[in-house]
Length: 613
Image 1 (cartoon, rainbow, N blue to C red):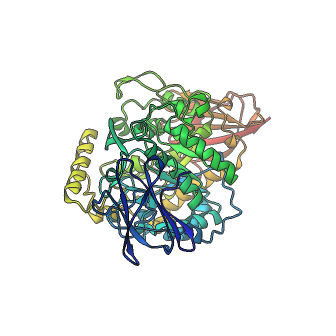
Image 2 (tube, helix red, strand yellow):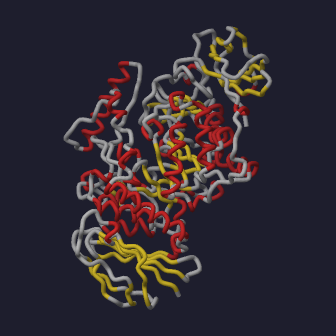
Image 3 (cartoon, rainbow, N blue to C red):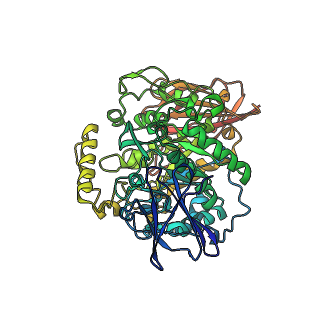
């Protein structure tokens, strides 16, 4: 792999490399501890390089292309003074890792937990997460998915405005803090996934154009010109971003990546950017002896995303399944139809369980075209499902979580739908105990014109959704502080019950052989009109069976148990007294039912039966 940026070799030796193919010369400007301006040597393929001695970790430096002003290193690994300040040399070999025995967790066994470092704890740092890990592990969560942590402007941001894809945010604790957190996670049996952004670079502190043709006007994205992966001089940008996953896997022991909005990345070359990245990661897997999964966020509804390049695909391990969220959400929140008008029928939820993509080639009014392709037969561990994530919560005008939109019974049913599915479940931080703090969009830019542009953009975006209120000011620190979790409530009242409900669901998912089966051939669904559905699942050996009876309506739903098993034993019931917030004398389903028996599913309930052959 081509090294870029400042590669510290130990004993004061450091190699500085920068890609600037259209520049005639490059100067390395060392500013600490001793100021020096040193010409760099032109190397092949548009790179400038300089190897030095007497350079220690923490040394601050700029690059100066063609005698222009100083700019931070585009491949900086640390920006201790923010996005406009000098870059700093990092010694990755100095950290004393304690996770030599860690080999990761099989992807199909993951319980993902998305969190934002700045709002997860009062302190908002990597190290402040460490004391919470035991509590997360106790619930059954075994994988954190960090929202982007690469350097962004100021100290408050979702992370998608990052401008240094190799640098770890200084206000979170920098490279050292991230390594401490990952090491601690592995000690608790928790994997760490990192959200990365390869479709754009944020606006403030973006100096890429000062060095080389990282962007192309050939394609337009929501953020402006696209990254240059297939036009003139594109090899430098391709190497820069395709090597980035290797950096996180090697230097920080990250277990996997979630890649933001891959549908806004364009490459028509013979070797697609994703194919290039895929093969680099496969080679690293062989060297490290562990799998390195990649999860895509994709708006394509295309199986190509999760097919291997040998079959014409992009090679992702899995992708977020938005269709599952949309159809389930509209069924549990009647207001959801305004947000997702193409969803809301029980047959769609059944299709989400059995197929994956709900929109798979038919005409979709919202898209104004035929959209998607079938995902029938694709195993469940190629999709990640959720009831909420940073987008679903943060892109509401009031930042409401699902627990702020629906009642407790609907919340339990929705949680069960995710955990009893054949897919990889993802929780959004605080969801496990029904945290009621909002999650807003927030920034801390230093450029007044940019701040006003962000404010205007958010107002226009919410106007398109038809919300009747204005969003809080993204630049106001209060917007950020209001978004912090309220950990103190997780042991109180209904929050404690919701925590225990998730704990029960996760324990069942991780222990029951039927729920370990991700194959679609062993799954079918009976739709109960528009009231609910029954999910049939069986183990890989065909000997164990589960009936998951969902009633998403406010009225009882009739169902006749049609299965060859003679007797079914109840193992989970959301109407059991221990799961109720208030007394309810209405009877639930019986402890055992016989094949052919007619039962009445209580309103807003999930009941699970098991049987063996």
